[in-house]
Length: 225
Image 1 (cartoon, rainbow, N blue to C red):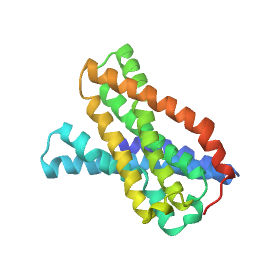
Image 2 (image 1 turned 45 degrees about the vertical axis):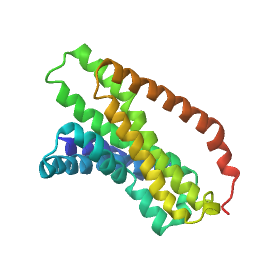
Image 3 (image 1 turned 30 degrees about the vertical axis):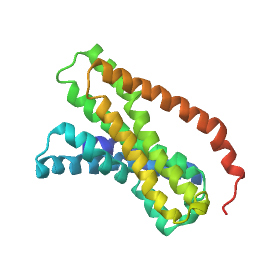
């Protein structure tokens, strides 16, 4: 089912990529498409881990799924970082990372929505979808965005004074995984946990707004080294 959902999203996006002329828009749409496909890869990988490791679902969601999902979402960014660094020096890579997270979340949200439709009424299903759309979606987007920001900062020389600047790839990835795992842990609880998760999301929205309204706009005037 999740593969069909990804195809339903990616197929029209592929047409849009062909039709648009702006290179930046093409890149963002391609990363959005990759995010959707990475959702399929993550679903199959998580299912295999659940069976192979014989672990509870909660353990998978908190300890293993964040590692798998953040790696797969950011895989094209890692490739660009290693083989074509000049693309990672452009601040668009940060926005592209967010688009990859959004693509992943869209497919995941539709998958959960279809599954929940079997047990929830129309109003309950709407509330469930709205909750995921304004919470899990921003978590997925910003977690991958952290990786994009880390790769951009490394290529722009931000961490050179510390030495071994490439090791900050693992730092950025670790922060993304930590945010993801913490969110997954919080939402497993009832009212208190969900309230804390929503509060975390509010902070993430505000942080994202401040970042893009101030820091991101100034990155265009900076130059590597």
